[in-house]
Image (cartoon, rainbow, N blue to C red):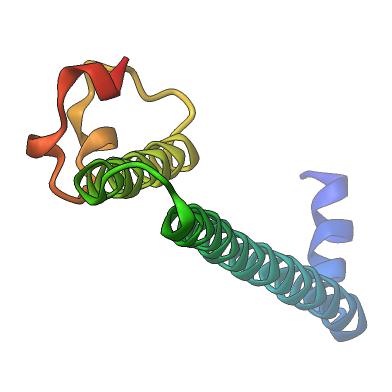
Length: 126
């Protein structure tokens, strides 16, 4: 009754057409999966590099305090504050990477561990 049905059924019966189609789909799936895997590991590597660079910057700033002329107590206070601020910086960067549409009301974006944030004085956070 339907003249096109015979043509469609003949294509389904042709093994060469199915082989070509299966090869194309298989290649596309493998290629896209490989690209996604590569992008995932590039992102992980970049996040670790970001953490390492900030660690180096914070370590350098702490090391430069060795030659300070202020009291040892002031130097320790500065170093502790600096480390806590870098901890907050890293947590905020991870929250930004996690979800760009994250609102401040969404607390899940901001539940990364911080280094002793309760001992921060309000003046340091301004």
